[in-house]
Image 1 (tube, one colour):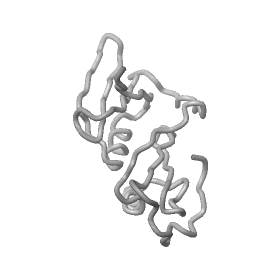
Image 2 (tube, rainbow, N blue to C red; image 1 turned 120 degrees about the horizontal axis):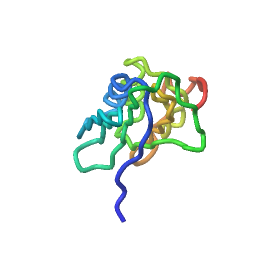
Image 3 (cartoon, rainbow, N blue to C red; image 1 turned 180 degrees about the horizontal axis):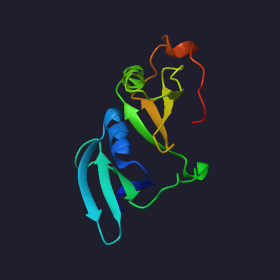
Length: 138
């Protein structure tokens, strides 16, 4: 068996693609289905890596309900502090800062929780992250 992708539904495709681009994912393929009135965009850290499928239903006007039973997506990063700084500079709220130098959470524009995990050992605690409180849910 081979893991292929995780699908999430998004209302604003451009905004979602931009968010995951700041996170470090690139678009590997896209498919428009005019008869079904939807677009699929597949993103990955690089071609051939596990993917996220963004499904944009063209006629969806209302926000999708949040299902905490979905859980979260998780990515290993080279430097959790740098990743959070890059996301914050792009306007992303750091919901659970990496106070421990190991783990942080952010949310996509469609409120999908994204966990960022430090590759290898945890980094030494550093400001502003060490004293930053949680914001919202994650």
